[in-house]
Length: 148
Image (tube, rainbow, N blue to C red; front, side, top):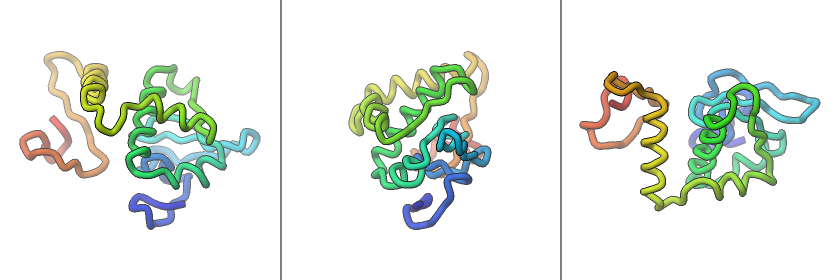
């Protein structure tokens, strides 16, 4: 499996096969279902079949990787967390990608971003969003402890 820079080997028990970020909890392989269960800080909670986690997800191109991560995150946030985990496999991956906005669809991405910020903040209260990776945004938007 390829790693965060697409040239470093990582194991699906320690890194998300979709976004390549370190997992918040080491994944478990359910041998009866032949699926890994992932708890990713970026993608959310989801499951992936062994074949998808080992053979399919690592080969996704970068732009589709970010779109798939967003689709999984939306599915995770819109369902009962911890009870109804999305199972990603080779069959539903295309459907998930189709549900994500296209690379150049800025208006849809902005609405989704603003909706996510609204769900995670309290009006009138300061908001800080932790980052897992460096974000290359204009300096006034980023502080050393996260996005403001």
